[in-house]
Image (tube, rainbow, N blue to C red; front, top):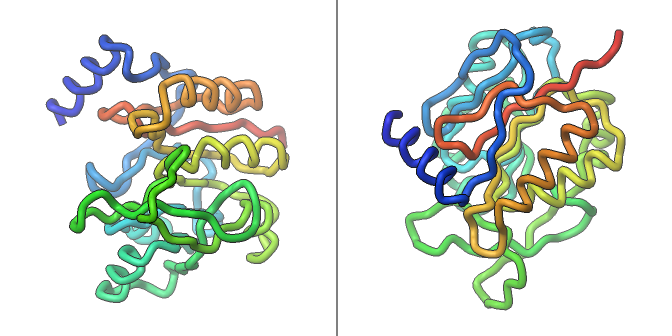
Amino acid sequence: MLRSKIIKYINLLLGVDPVFFQQQICLKKHFGTPYGGWTIALEGINKNSIIYSFGIGTDISFDLDLIKKYSLTINAFDPTPKSLEWLKQQKIPKSLKVYQWGIADYDGKEKFTLPPQENFVSFRKTKKDKSDKNIKLPVFQLSTIMKKLGHKRIDILKMDIEGFEYQVIENILKSNLEIKQILVEFHHRFSGFSKKDTEKAINKLNKFGYKIFNISDVGLEYSLIKKYSK
């Protein structure tokens, strides 16, 4: 934990990461492991809350903790082969519903770059990728997925989607969807991206009413909330 904080502040000082601070005070709690967990705002979360969790990887501790605490249903999404193979070896509760779809700013098939090493899990989005080390997998816009599942709102949208978050955030905001909390890991440290991409995304989220209530010790995972009038 201390090492993560030190790395975070070094990256801030070196100008690698953007500089943002907490913008909203609310009652919050971390669910899941230090590696795979996320911090949510507790207000309004209950067994009827609609949770979308994009990017499973090999850690569902966040999802399982929320299910244990609130007895709710988690809609989890990941089309990548390594993650799906890992899931087959896990004991998954019925309340964790897994869909083999990715999220993008269009409906169709998207090119995913294979992990750089055999023991890595995450398939990445890279700009100007011309290598043959990729695979095409099914993706949908969030609005399409919500229609497929019959949802008109989302209480928590979690995205760890390896560089796809930039185009997806743009698409979500244009679609005018009702989403209370957005938890997102930014990947500006990836090749092909920069802190300007993350600055632009967060500033646009701010413009649409989303305020930061938590930034992880690593400095890449942001939790934002939007207050909707009742």
